[in-house]
Length: 252
Length: 295
Image (cartoon, rainbow over all chains, first blue to last red; front, side, top):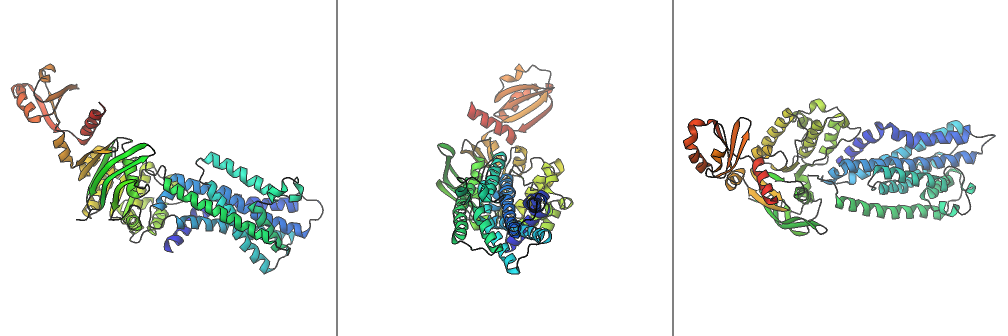
């Protein structure tokens, strides 16, 4: 437990407190989007359900950019600098490190729920029960898992330039296709079935169902579960392969 | 005495490219080993096998009587690899404090920083340190777990003279404490001074394993230098002489038999001034050995 708590302190300082850009992109940008599309760029009145649903979408979007831009780049940099290898050579191994980074990613997503929730309540008078808020926080954290694992997966890419391109190629199409930026009904018919397979679609639907008292389809939860299971298998396999390969460990 | 490292007929290859060929070695507790060799000789691969990063494919390798990379080995090994850890947003003190929690018998980070003259750097971010300062932090990281066995890979690269002296003093202290060290370095004078035994690796095989004195005995080259007005050709045919060179105002003879060459020089002694005689350094022997092999 001691190494893990120390790891949490260590990563909290370097990844959150002393990393303003990371916070900016993972929280402030979706918050800005939320204000823009529910307050600034609207004419007439906006329905209460749109304000709630868009809050849910921006929570998912925040988690997605946090995982695919922030976490993926951090993991890659730590690996290239030899930090991952250093952990591998310690008696406690790499588990506390991965767990700590994952937890901080989730904390950031929890913070996104707080910030976006506060904006929704303060600016758009959204009103939800305590139970709904707690459910939203819980689902946001569970819903962070698929994108977090996707972030870990793409961090195995060898070059920072390629990672940057891949992060962009996954994040923005996935956000658009799964209806995070605007309603899916606005997309062409042939694109919609693809969007409905995205992990962000399932999580967004789940959040939306809880926030608007809509019926939750079992396929939504199953969809998240399948994504988590598949990505977890790939990440475990990839990590083992990466550590086994151990390229560039000792350069003598 | 139970060896700390035991390798028997270890071979390793990357695909079809053989990197280590039938390596056998025994390292006992408290020894300081200088592992030397040209680039690509196999030092990297050997260290990776010892650390458990790579798996032995042929032969047997044991550290602390266990497989490399096992929990006990990780607890007892400290590594100062070539790459430093300039982690962003982290101070020297924070890195060492975090690192200490990964080991059961860790040293106090504060005391370690005092011992290694790092206290002044404790609050400095790692990304603001110079190369030599980062190297010292990497040394501290290797020591933080209070290991019995240390791998030091090019430990003094980038360090200034004072830092180097402090480093080697600390290595002596570790030796006094009974720690075992394996040091790879291209700065062979450092190895010559500190190592109990030298392992000379070439093309995946040990060319030599033994003390520096053994190595000197095996390659009995002697350098004789003096000032003289005599022609260089005077010395070319003397017994044992293999090379005659003019280096500024000095004549330098290289001999494979110092005793015979000295006797042959006796008639010329009145005309020789500032005469010095040196056995060859590890660097000289290393160059000769690797040249001989290439020739």
